[in-house]
Length: 346
Image (tube, rainbow, N blue to C red; front, side, top):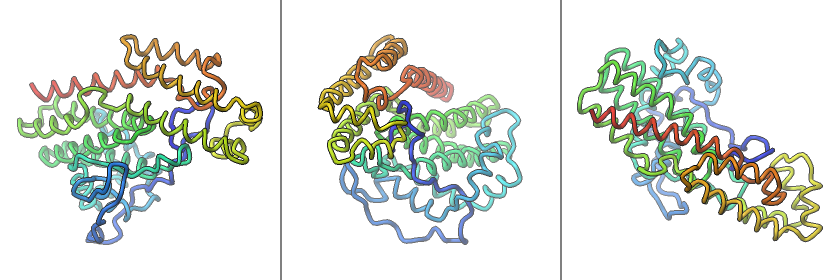
């Protein structure tokens, strides 16, 4: 399932993330170059789509190291006094070639992982876990290099981490943007750590500034586009599934909604069309609230209206929840982004 802020629904079903382990053997990443894939935007090649470069690296990764990395404090690499555990340091040292490949993949502006949006809530996003892990590990390596006085190498790793985070915002669902929020913060902390300690020269600040410039000037985390995307994904899917045989039961199985009775009642009483129209109207209201001057308050009021049943029963289950919190987080991260760009320009 791809909607990350759905109400009363189990956490999103991302296909088992590939954790980050050791390279199988020296030079193993010299595997054949993927020729091309077909995505919504057309046929793309590794020279135009970073996704193909990322997959080329990830295919050799082992998920066994993932939990250890998290436990060893990978998320804290932007904090004062952070140092890698021996296990994490070994992982970084043993995967220099892999990290360089991830850094190079991030240099390609376009990134389309070919998510099967037509599958609706059943679509999988197996790239999101590895992409976040890649950005974090690039950030951790950057911190190690900064503390060793290797400013140029650290800058390149940091720029790669920033660009990989921006690639998360290319998806059309809120979950990816929410993951980008979490990924961006420690990376931005590390850039500021370097600026406070005056370790970047003018050229290195330019490299970092160019990486930040990858983010859109307006709506850098792509929230408005994700709201439109989620409507395009969820409403047709719900119409298709609930109109089919045993549709309510299938939806309960996919989403883990506690009871099939409410959904089946909508179908049995011929209310499905009206309910879908109300859910569609919710997205109209959400987009209007997002574009308003009092975004957070407007979205908070909208959330209350959903809970009160103004947009029907389906919206209670399937409308994205807590959009006012999303707005607050977006404002915070956008402010940080703008501030750091200004700091890099001084």
